Length: 134
Image (cartoon, rainbow, N blue to C red; front, side, top):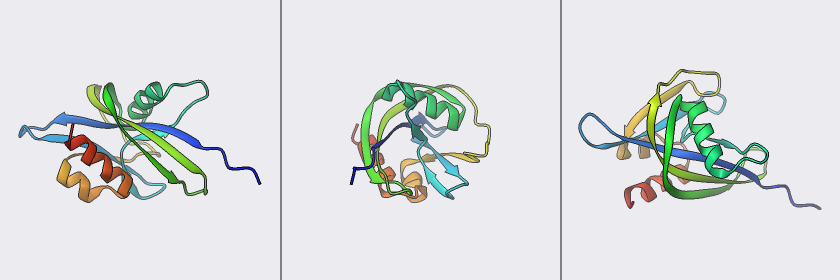
């Protein structure tokens, strides 16, 4: 039997300094899954990982952002049983504002400890460790 094709995706940990000078990261709520995660999505045909990360962060958060550095990747089996590899970048917001949509209905800027509590998946929480050690 043929192995299922790997789903390739990219996303970002969008980070800024909050009003109190502490780092904050953006986490998004997806009502279809009722989960909290970092913005991410599948690559379009011919798209680079970097371009996909920038596009997906903009689509899901409303923020145009710049890549700072690679942050790591997550490998897991998605809800359809397919292997999925998501590459993440640390990103800084440049301009924009969040507008709720059917795909993402909430965005919260949280400190790292708050994000660690809110994020649904262990692989997202692991990215925070990579972020903190940068």
